Length: 387
Image (cartoon, rainbow, N blue to C red; front, side):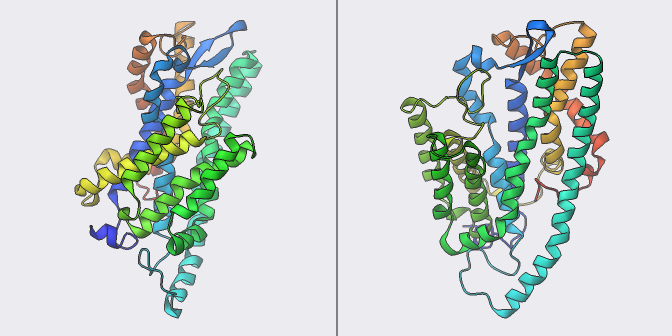
C-alpha cells in the first residue's frame, strides 16, 4: 500500500489520473473520428454512416475507444479530492470545531473558483456555437441542402451533452463525498445502476439514464480520491463488468457496439445502457490494477503529451467533431465531390485504412485550432475537465 493509498486527499497529485484522463480524451476523439462516416445521399445532402453497420464484426474495437466512463471517473477523483480540506481519506470521526471552521473557509473560497471554471467553460462553448451559427447561416443563404445543415449541426452540438451530467455531478460532489466517507462507494452506485436498468426496460424515462449511468464512475472516482485505490475491488470490477457485458449481449440481445450506429434501433450510448456501465466498471478495474503495479505513475511529473492533453481536455472534446466536419467540407470543395475516407461510404477495410491515414492531419488541425482559439491552455493549470 502506497502513501497515496493511505492519504489520497492530502498526499499530492496522483499522476496516474492525469494519464487516465489523457487516455480517455484520446479514446473519445479517436473513436468518434473512426466511427463517424459521412456520405452524400439523395439530393446531394450529407448523412451520417457508420463503418460498424457495414462491418459489425468490428464492434469489439469500440470497447477500447468508448472511454467516457474514464473521463467521469477522473472528474469524480479531481472534484472529490479537493473539496474537503483538513480531513484524511476515509476518516469517519466527527469533525471538530477547527475542521468545521476550515471547511467553511474553504467552501467560501471555492465559490469564486467554481464561477471561474464556469466562465472558462462558457467562453469556448460560446465561440463554438457562434462560429458554427455563422457557417450555417451562410450555408442557408447558399442553398446548401437541409440534410447537410442538419448533419453538421448535430455533429457539432453532440459533444455538448457531456457537459450537463458533468456539471450536475460536480454540483453534488460535496454530499456524495460525505456519503462515500460514511458508507463507502458500493451502496451509492447501486441506485444509479438500478435506474439505468429500469430505463433500459422502459420503466423509467430514458433521460434519467444519463446522470444515473455516469454517476457510477464519478462516485468510484470520489472513492479513490478519498479512500485510495485499495478501497475498490479491482478484479471484481473487471470480472463483474466483463460478465455483465457478455450476458447483456448474448442473452438479453443488447448491441455489441459500445457506440451508437445510425439506423440501428438501440444504442448503448444514447442514452447510456447497462452495457455502458459494465464497460466502465471493467475499464476502471483495469486502471486500478495497472496503476497499482506501475508505481512510477504516482511519482514525478507526467510527460509533455499527457500534460498537454490534460490542459486542453475541454477544447479538444468540444472541437474535435467540428474539425472533422470542417476538414471534410474543405476537402469536398477542393475535390469537387466525394473524398475517400472523409466523404465516402464506410463499407469496407479500404475506408478504414483511408480514414486512419486522415487521423494525423485531423489531429494537427485540432492542435492548431486549440493553439489559436484557446491559447490559455498552454499555461492553464486547471479547468472544467482537469481538476
